[in-house]
Amino acid sequence: MRITLPELVRRMPKAELHMHIEGSLEPELIFALAERNGVALGWDSVETLRQAYAFEDLQSFLDIYYAGASVLLVEQDFYDMTWAYLLRARAGNVRHAELFFDPQTHTARGVPFADIVGGIGRALDDAGREWGMSGALIMCFLRHLDEDDAFATLEQAMPHLSRIIGVGLDSSERGHPPEKFARVFARCRELGLRLVAHAGEEGPPAYIWSALDTLRVERIDHGVRCVEDEALVRYLAAHRIPLTVCPLSNVKLRVFADMASHNLRQLLDADLAVTLNSDDPAYFGGYVEDNFAAAFEALPLDAGHAYQLACNSFDAAFLPPQAKAQYRAEVAAFFAAHT
Ligand code: HPA
Ligand code: ZN
Image (cartoon, rainbow, N blue to C red; front, side):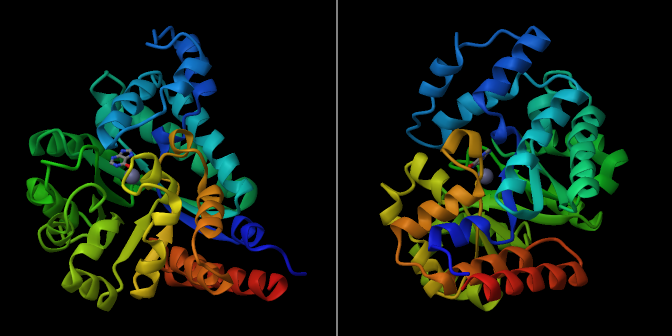
C-alpha cells in the first residue's frame, strides 16, 4: 500500500536520540503537577503559559523550561511526565528512545537523585514490558554551572550508573565551551559511560571540534553550524559522527528563520549521519513525527531520505548490534510494504 510522504515519515519505525524529558512537560501537566504539589507558578492559566512560548533564542526558552520543571518534586511526578511522553512517542512509532534528563535542575531544589532516576526509569521499564519499546537514560550536565557542580552530580549518580547509559552537556551554549568540562567527561569515560554533547546549535564550529577533541564525544547534539567549517564537515562524514538534529527546535529558537531555510538537506547531501529528533516537544510545537512531517513538507526530501534517516536513527543509537539489526529489519519491512 502506498501512502503519502508525510504519512510515511510519521508512521515509519524510528529511534529518538535527542529529547529532554523535562521538555516533554505539556502546560496542562505543568499545571496539574503544580496543583498536586502546591507549587506556585508565574502564570495564571494554561493559556498564558502557552502564550509565553514565543522564544527569541536559546536562553529565552531555557528560562521558561527551568520554571516549568520546578513542579517536579517526587518520584511519581517523574514517572507521570515520562509515561506521558512515552505514550506520545509510541503514537509516532518510536521504537527506541534515549532520554536526556537534567539532574541539577532538580537536586538544586532538594529532590533526591534516586527519585528522579527511579521515576523516569520505572516508566521506561513499563513501556518495555507493555509494548516492547527500548529506552535508555542520558544524564546531562548543565554547562552554565561549573565543573565542580558536574563532579558533585556524578558523585550522586554513582549508585545509579546501571540505569544511566551516558552523559551529555546542555543548557546555555554561548560562553560555555565544551572544554570547560574536559575533566568530568574524562572521568565519565573511565567509568564506561557513553558521551554526547550539545554543540553547534548557537555556538560556533570550534565548539563542535572541542566536543570531539577534548570531550571525545561519540555524537553531537544539534551540530547544524558545522557547515561553516568545510574541514569539520569532512571529518564528521568520514568518522560517521551522528548529528542529532531538531528541526522544529531550530526554527522556534531562531537558529533558522523558517523550515524552508533549514540546512537538513545540505547535511544529508554532505553524507553526514543525521538523525531527526524533537528536543523539547512540548515547547517547540511537536513530537518527533511532527518534526519529520514539517521537514519533509518544507524541504526537497524524498522517500530515500526518509529511509536513510530511519536507518541512521538506529545506527546512531546506544544499542547492541543485534538490537540494531532487528530494528533495521523492521525499517526495511515497513518500507517494502509502503513504498
Ligand atoms: N539546547 C540546550 N539545552 C537544552 C535544550 C536545548 O535545545 N533543551 C533543553 N536543554
Ligand atoms: Zn537539546
